[in-house]
Amino acid sequence: MNALDLLEQLSNAFGPSSVEDDVRDLIVDVVKPLVDELRVDRMGNVIGTRRGRRDDVLLLDAHMDEVGFLVSYIEESGFLRLFPLGGWDARVLPGHALNVRTKDGTIVRGIVGTLPPHITAEAERSKAFALDDLFVDIGASTKDEVLALGIDTGTPVVPGYPFERINDNLVMGKAFDDRAGCTIATCALDALQGFDLDMTLAVSFTTSEELGLRGARTVANQVAPHVALALEGTTAVDVPGVHGARKLASMGKGPTVTIADRSAIASRQVVALLEDVAAKDNIPYQRKLPGGGGTDAAAIQPVGEGVLVGVISVPCRYIHSPLSMLFLPDLENAIRLTTGFVRSAASLL
Ligand SMILES: [Zn+2]
Figure 1 (tube, rainbow, N blue to C red):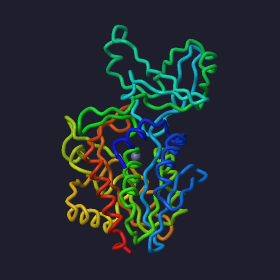
Figure 2 (figure 1 turned 120 degrees about the vertical axis):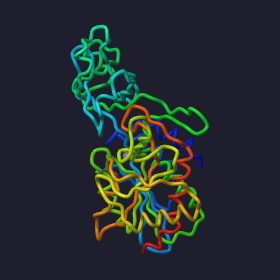
Figure 3 (figure 1 turned 90 degrees about the vertical axis):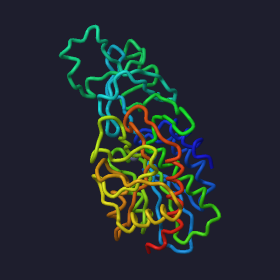
Figure 4 (figure 1 turned 120 degrees about the horizontal axis):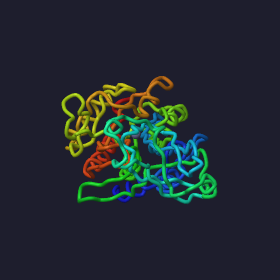
């Protein structure tokens, strides 16, 4: 399986939290031949299973949703207002292109409108603003015109940037958080074809992670895993002005292994096994510094009798903005680390 091609298709797919249909269709197509069973639950999570020698379950988890918006209000003048799906900082949005998906699935292009410096007073320019201050211009001049396009309150919106390869090693795209994780899970499944599994392997592609890890909670209840890995695109902050304890991870230094973040502390046995596998298979990796956001691992860990959890991530610069950047060898090494972990995970039982 070609990780680059898969990442491109997944990143380009339209799928903000709770509107992951296009991503789910793509994943079901690709994953179905790689598992013994595949189902979609009522929330929209995709759960695949490959039976191993034992009934104990190892779960690989990635979330399908990307940060996006719903149209919250349509101005009489035809401009749209936004309600956030996931963690947005309004400062990164002005001037960016957005894709609005109409009722019949057509994409309408828009731009987050800004005021030109020509009419902005000095004091106004240094003022912070909120998402409520922003408006989207789709070129409509009345509310009726917007409604006639099939856009209404609740219509989903995502950043409007296609996947792009910028050199041999680097790509840019809108949704590496977490289509990078979906790529890792799928490519690891593919790499494990023909490998005689000790533990039963479940793979979940979850909904609504960005709205509070909502899909993963129900997945963990259904799958009852013994061990689980969340696979992510995480915050690379190796950029000017970020030093020391704030520099959680760097792009190009290999996949990250999480010790702790704001949502959970990784199980020490899992961290130790991940580091053993990396050493044995000669896979570059970095420990992600404690801090940052949360992952599905936090929702999975306290379910049933408790789950041993870990997180492997591809460090991506500028996540939770309209466009992020990823170093392809980090993705390849994340797939190798995940595959190696699955091969050794029975030692945790
Ligand atoms: Zn994520």
